[in-house]
Image 1 (cartoon, rainbow, N blue to C red):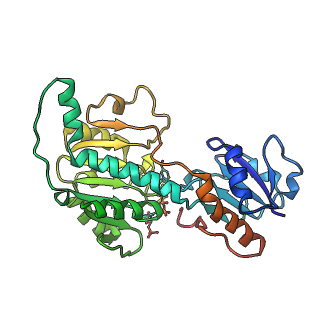
Image 2 (cartoon, rainbow, N blue to C red):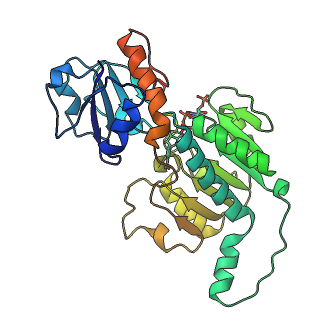
Image 3 (spheres, rainbow, N blue to C red):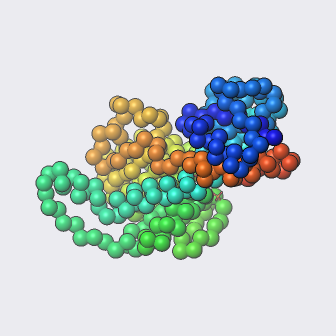
Length: 309
Ligand code: NDP
């Protein structure tokens, strides 16, 4: 009988328990309110648990990060020496794809200009461009990035993608390495950041990298705020080097009220909602990971601490 403890500041145990029980009928479910004997717990499902949380479980075999980005978990100094698995959730992928398609399309179809014109009661005609004239660059071709890139390509955008290792995706110009990044930036009208936050990606898009984009390009960041140097981003938006941005993630969340980004006409801010976990769709793989670890095998979607994602 798998004994599983749950702690999340975002998700409800009332959503997760039935979802997981469908795939693990003999589940022994523990919460902060009904902890039972912590020594019996074999797996933890967690999103940003408090410091010291894991120490109470001496028999722990698996930590399931209740999200795709594991940076908050890997950045802790109290991690147990057990495998960490991330969610691979088809519902999360669809939500993220919908946000990215919306954000890219908003820029490609000049929607911010029409919104501004409407506020002035002005009939401002801008001739639409064919979608393949819009070159989209997607940084990060993982579970979420690849799906978004493929959806954009299927719509008719010209899509290039960039990843750490070489990749091949139908209809996507796949690049890697620093030269690949520079080439991608130089030929991108809308840049979509879908990278995890790691030692290698923190501050990756600094002033120098942003300057490689064609003047007036737009930026969409749904990965993690610190991948883009925020001061350089603000300056690029102010100077017009960047024409606009759709931002879902920030250095500090919630974004402080005094932050200059709030007041910028060419910026759309959303409060880290590009995607969320859908327990019913993530549960089959979580259950399989628990079964595998209890049978002495590695879990699905294991996070590699060494590479940071
Ligand atoms: P994955 O771990 O599946 O993929 C990460 C991708 O980034 C891979 O293609 C990887 O390359 C690439 N990558 C990592 N490091 C580098 C590097 N140094 N240089 C070049 N490429 C690199 O992540 P997901 O696609 O599932 O998710 C991406 C991120 O989205 C998450 O880490 C999280 O931060 C964010 N996120 C945001 C949400 C929101 O609501 N805003 C919701 C969910 C996630 P390779 O393929 O070679 O390994």
